[in-house]
Image (cartoon, rainbow, N blue to C red; front, side, top):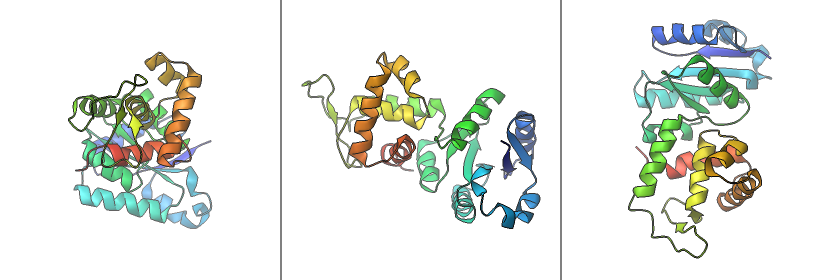
Length: 226
């Protein structure tokens, strides 16, 4: 199925590059004006639309644009592309409803796969941002000394509604990156069944209905605010 894709990037060179990278994929780039002319016809099926914008504008303008797109086009998906991402900015964009984040340095295959994950309802985050976040969390003073009653000490954070173990926080990092269960299992040298048990426990603790909600919650609750 073709996904109507609207590029709202302020950078002309970035728009040209994205058009080239998406040519021949399921993401059919169309002119913004053409998309607006079809507003009535797509109002009932806006979920198959994708909007891509960059961070060339001031942050407040970018946040407002994400909010406006999600409000005017219910069910649509919004992806933000940038040369780099500050985790505080990631958290604020995610809070406004952005569904995914891609680096401009991503190659064609990574970009297309990331957009496909977003259209499936999975959040996508640059892996480098997630790794940096986890590295800082593991060395941060906000981590309490572990109680080795089960090999995994509880981690307490004022922003968390429930206690999460270090393993659960680690798995949330993978969920924020849209990693599949089998790939998480390989990375952690655990069985896929064990990963499923961990995820079910995480969902129950934070009150999320699915892994996408868990990823969105983690981005808001765990990443430092700007």
